[in-house]
Image (cartoon, rainbow, N blue to C red; front, side):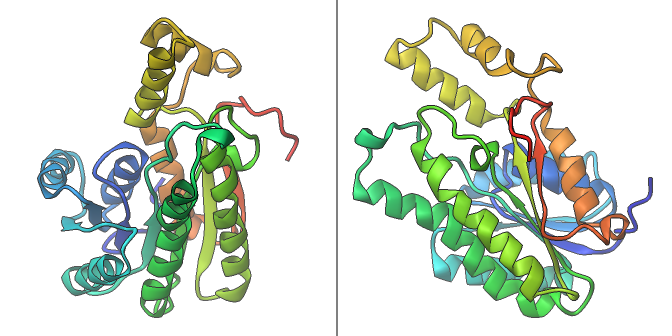
Length: 262
């Protein structure tokens, strides 16, 4: 299916690896010129080299910390300058550490609010005028934890809810010029899953990585965790004219693992 995105411009935050990288790749395969972002410039260069071998669009890089307001401004400014505008914004961020409530301090809450919520607030604020020039889109990559609380992830369970409220509000306030949607990934084969499993092994809750991986997939009817490219394809679709009547929704991507009716 031709998504009608050729020669568009996109910015994907936190995209040197994982689901952000998969989203950038899916967009670039459709001919979108994509700016990828991360804090590590060497990692970004490596990712750019990998993506250039499999995509049709141009890949640009801009290093920056999405928890810093000044970095967000720089990231958007460079994207617009190098790609002659901005049509699509994909927000993404690394996951909060695995903790229970009594293990958290005030600093944990403030740091993760900056990471997960204020990064989105700031980048949308900086991007709005450019997105409005065409049929702009915003897709936020968040987590299934906004629908069903995940054990030992109190920060993700709590803080990410704010982004869903923000996206729903933006879908109403920014329409018809800009559409805003969210995707809610369940477990996917990324470094994040590896990190969470290793924490549980270290705590002695499980014996091995394989045991942890089995635990993550045991409630999924498809009997596997997701592939990053499967989520990336959905992000590209939501950014395209093919999804032009989809606005203000939060779409689970979890292989049917959720028990929630909505």
